Image 1 (tube, helix red, strand yellow):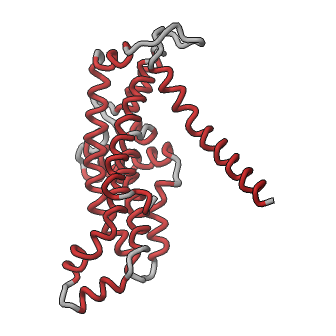
Image 2 (cartoon, rainbow, N blue to C red):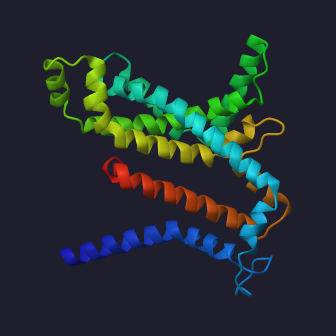
Image 3 (cartoon, rainbow, N blue to C red):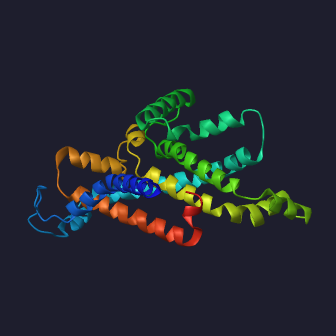
Length: 267
């Protein structure tokens, strides 16, 4: 009976994993098609669509803007999210539970709703301050910070849950102040959570489409929006090639990061 249950569990896990990975397999396969109009069976295989990426400036511009926004938003998210996680994990105060739920809310709220709310907020802010806010790079980055912070708070909080408070108390008993205790004891212990939170926050920001549609201004287009606009006029394996490049870059970063901080400890 135990063997049957284990077999059923492994079978369900295999089906779920296959359901998740099958679209990725088809995208990678499509990127190497030779013909312009996708059809089955393929007429042959070629790398021409990867070369086509560099023939269109908008892909490079979109990638640059997405990378820039994701990097800045992640840096700001770390500055705000790590202290917030420390406060929630180490301080017991009235309203800590609602505050924790509020910080994680962007993970639950649909992207379209969040984008609409951010756009309305920017409109009200522009009217109140009488300065340009809508469509600026700062407004786009601010919106992405909102979706980065939940990942950082959640993963750093998970790392803090595994830190023995006795080691921090021992450091303070030996003469270390709060800052030295954090720098020499707490920070090394939660480094995997910080790195994982920053990594997942960056990936979320880099691939965000729904909210970015409401926040981009004239002359600014992130890579997901470039892909969407391209698909409105043309369907060929170029988009699959772009997706493969994104997948390869993100996978490489995650593998390198895991080599040094062991992401499996916190995710």
